[in-house]
Image 1 (cartoon, rainbow over the protein chains, first blue to last red):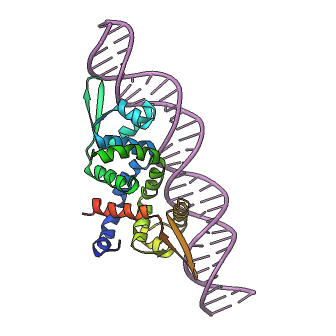
Image 2: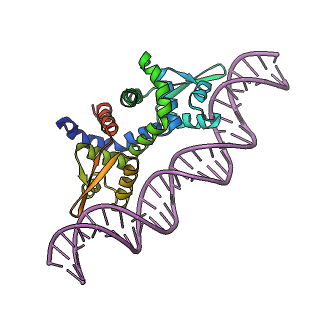
Image 3: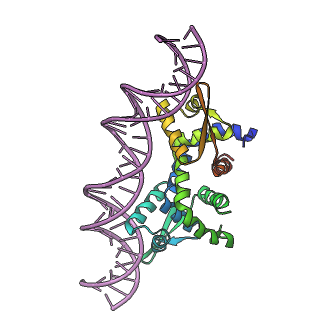
Length: 104
Length: 104
DNA sequence: TTTTCATATTATGATATTATAATATATTAA
DNA sequence: TTAATATATTATAATATCATAATATGAAAA
């Protein structure tokens, strides 16, 4: 903390603060956090996501829509199921960091 | 991603998801993010924090109150000024990670 | 071709967050 | 004392989020 590199970065982060905050917001809800963590393991169907986070079908669908609009995830259909995966690498990095910080 | 260690951790994070999400929520607003980033550099007075994040005096005070209730920060008075600093080490680690991810 | 299954969409009320204005408190200076 | 400064608190209206129910869509199975 407090390195020269980081001091320079504070200004950088200021420019990005809205974008970064918007991304963090997606992770800042217990069920959305679980959704993204389960997807960080591997692509998941909506049904699998429902089971992983315990939210209702409708709620999950709305959460996923929000994440898609933010550009964090993408979906593909395979028969009746729709599979979602994380496409924003920053999300993967962030989740890895969270494991490091909270599960060590 | 997907290591054995991390798979075990998904369950761990599930137990913590509310706590982790609550912490991330504090960072998930542009001005609150800037507040915490400036405090990550060093202890700051409320006036300095106002300048750093551009929010109104009242808004800053309310943001700080929320962070204090979450146990993220503590304050001390020195004359007319009140200084705040981050006391939750996880916040410092998280901010360091954010710099690594978004400012590289 | 109807039914079933998986998912999405829409609508809505309840709750939470945000921004702002107004007022209050504590400390120092005059 | 009184005034000025720094910060906190309270109130409130505007907006956003959340949870839930109801309905719709699209693909496969019967």
